[in-house]
Length: 373
Image (tube, rainbow, N blue to C red; front, side, top):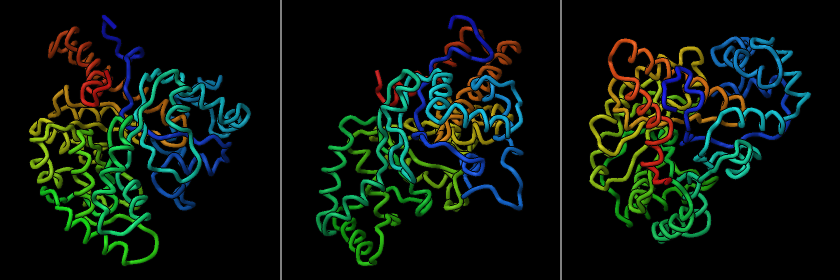
């Protein structure tokens, strides 16, 4: 890409946070349930096709299935069913043009494509992101609390041997106000003992354990992703502001290990500040991109007000529906391309600057931070 294309249609992409796809055919209710972070569409609220993401599906996805843009929802879903889930997945993923997928394998509410299967649909490659809490719960289920710290470190080292990074969902379990100090093994063992003594399903939701998991990833030199901000109804959003991570970010910065703040909406400006003042912090607006649809360009611009261009990454956070991959990539490309083209027109930067910045945000920053080269 030597000239600036405002659609950035050929921009190489590393999708640094995403999930697998469902391979079953979906009813309308099943399809709409995957358009939202809620449990499903509400009878009181009408159809999810009457939302930013629903309208974006109707605008951009029908042509991939040989229908005109803005095809009615019923016609679109009939065509989707006619082609079948596997063919829809193949067409949508091929249309993204994504070269590398870093796949969070820790969320498995039903059978979904593996990282390799996902990448093959786009003719790309995939690496795993290991979810810390899921691995910890496996280890806790296998033995006593006393030797949990060492058993977990051993298992994590083996599991991440071919992985690109790890991920924390502390935001969902305890919020992001985590202390910076690394807990010692005795403190971790006591926290594990309290958890196991509670009986019932093992679910890590203890600040001590979450801090231990994050530090374990840091000590292996693995980039650490954090879910931040917008998510499903399990999230207490007021506890998911990335500014709450400040103490932990101060403590971990000397290690020089990248910390990736995912999604961030509606706190994306706060995340941009953290990326500016902490050398190891990277940011994206992943999950928000397809959910805010036509407004995605505005959200990306707000992130870029303070975040250094060398600290911004692309992610789709697509799960389940291949349409979310298509929307995430297309809306990101268009939003970034138009922002950079306007800057050229207003003499804020040169075309050469814009082309270079697009390359950094699309793939270069992720390749550097995750050492993908």
